[in-house]
Image (cartoon, rainbow, N blue to C red):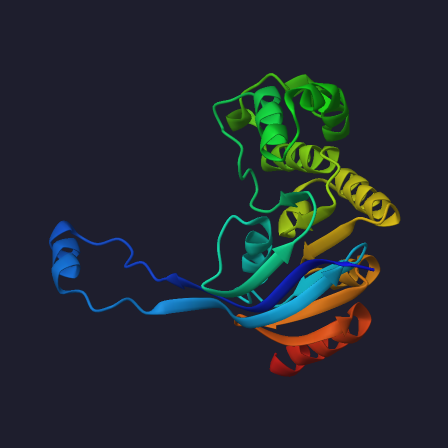
Amino acid sequence: MSCVIRFDRVTKSFVHHAGRMLLRERLRHLFHRAPAEPFYALSDVSFRVEAGESLGLIGGNGAGKSTILNLATGLVQPDSGTIEVRGRVAALLELGAGFHPDLTGAENVRINAALMGLHRREAMEKFEEIVDFSGIRESIHEPLRTYSSGMVMRLAFAVAVATEPDILLVDEVLGVGDEAFYQKCLERIREFQKAGKTVLLASHNALLIRNFCHSALWMDQGRVVASGKSAEVMDAYQESVIAAS
């Protein structure tokens, strides 16, 4: 097996914003502010994912799971360290990310298919497949702002899997849809796994990680706590959560 994702001593920080202030407070802040303290979303994180492997990312809110996924897509760059990703990537991260509310579902499909690397002819050929999988054909020519969050997730997932990526990155958004479509998504992920595709799945759902991931990476406050077989890492993580409660 060959490595398709590699993080080597990766650190990523963000600057805390001051939040809402009155104009006079804003001016005082601009001229007399102290250097902003950075927030370290990831600190010296290293791991690798082999081709065909499914890796689950676990940990509480703010652990660094979403930052790992965003770095893997290239949407953000690390402060330090090395990231290597080999192959076509499709990402299902923030709900509606890359979609425009004033465009129709059909227009958003074409634009997002292009953003994920499909040529115009490929996007046209895949259009019917995407609409059929999403199950929202009756609304496909309506503006996205009229869609429910579940409908947006349906469309986003349908586009992501139709691009036939080598690597599929999925954040918590799967839980937004109804149960029938959720199961449909899981079945498509199973098909990806059987085809030898690589999956990175960030979730709080312990059963999902155990059933779908070969291995798991436990993150806490931007650092790796443990990595290894998913069942072993999940057992340790859940014991820690119970002990802390």
